[in-house]
Image (cartoon, rainbow, N blue to C red):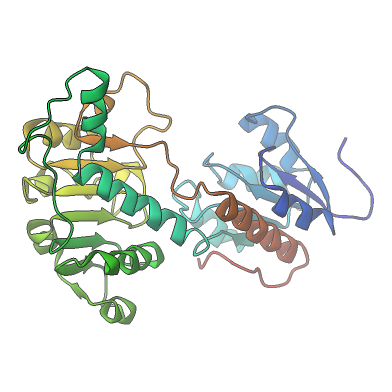
Length: 325
């Protein structure tokens, strides 16, 4: 049974949430978890009406159904994520319901993953490992040549916090030119030596293209057969945002027929990706299972910020990191 005492009760939807966040909640609240792991949606919905706050961990749909089941008792929810594509923001806005999230704190970890994918895909690490596994280590001056980073043109689609952090990392690689796209020029980007250009120009000129834009109706399949065809055949695409920003079927075709050189992907469609998906059969696709923010310190900090958001929402004070709807 959920505690019915004087202390608020908070539901944390995943038992593996870092202790840093759990301990922060326990100072002022009683914390409960779903019995099953991973939790079922029905279990979470059933508990939602018995708590004062929810620390929402994972990408299960967060929408009006949750708020309805929460009823009058539920006062605040915070996700433990920066991306909010699984949240019905319009429903939260309509109800003026306190909603928190955890951006910024994961920028460094995600940017590091992006640079790792850039190097791995551009230098054909996966293809090289396959050669070893298949006893096809040939060697020679023309074997498995990759793409240079020094002197290259790099394009970043989405110059928000993660995009800017990627740009900072790139300063140590002596790249030739840094381009970006966005709704409006950003002084922070200009300070990093980046030049705002139309998307077509970025795709046509870039040797490496990073996707760091949120998934919205406008960015769904932003990278598709048409836009891939505008890229250089030597270009490398890196996606650390959301899988549905890329038309994955079109990407697989582009990688198979040489429209682009390679891709480094931390996100894909669907997630988890089935082991027999064609994407995984491609030697020029470096694929990792959505590990962008997966460092000990980053996840602990995300949990703590989410906990602070929930505590503030329950207390009816401004959240540490409120979603700006």
